[in-house]
Length: 270
Image (tube, rainbow, N blue to C red; front, side):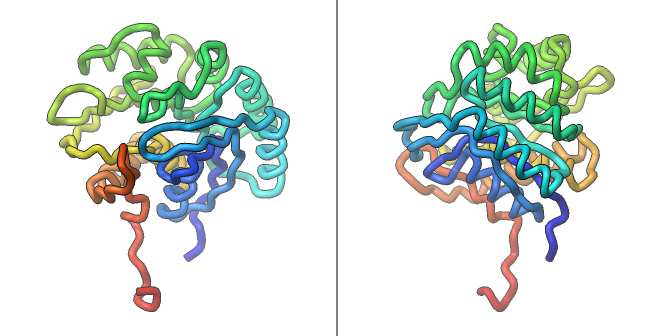
């Protein structure tokens, strides 16, 4: 089997492997893509929390992006953790040189454990300069609340928040509804022309570390294969739900999902 698409991932490293660039690589690979990376930060973390964060110099992040893309042109780009305004500025400049129109931004701000991963200045520049330059942003409810400065407690407020983000310059918005108290998870996809609702039964488990990273990478992979936005989101959500349902139960805290759920091993490897 040859990879069907080439995806450049710009994100931070998660030493436990459940989230961040490790989850991104696993997702892209499991869905039949070829993953390339630009590491923005190194974290020491496990399922119970984040111990430390070490930043990669912004110029080195830019070099990773440009030198990689110069040789192997990505079909789509996924952006995750960008923890400082300097990093975001360098990424914006780098993206202008690549000229790729299939960019998925997962505005990573808070780890599953509650640790803040981005400072206020970075949030401001992400809101004011970056979201308008990407094809799709995929915030969860807490991240959307930070971006719009309002609380979100209902599906209607999710929809209003999505349109607020469109007014701020976003082209397409997928707000993930997993934080609402409900038997169902309702994710909404909004742009200036349409609104789609994806409704799935909530899976009861604590093992959801890295679901946001996984979803955004899955959507980028499907976009890179040439699938339309709505279908890419639908397939990405389905992949993540199946990965959660597997319930690996690794670690003492919020464990990872099963990125291998889409893979069937050839008999000779069993």
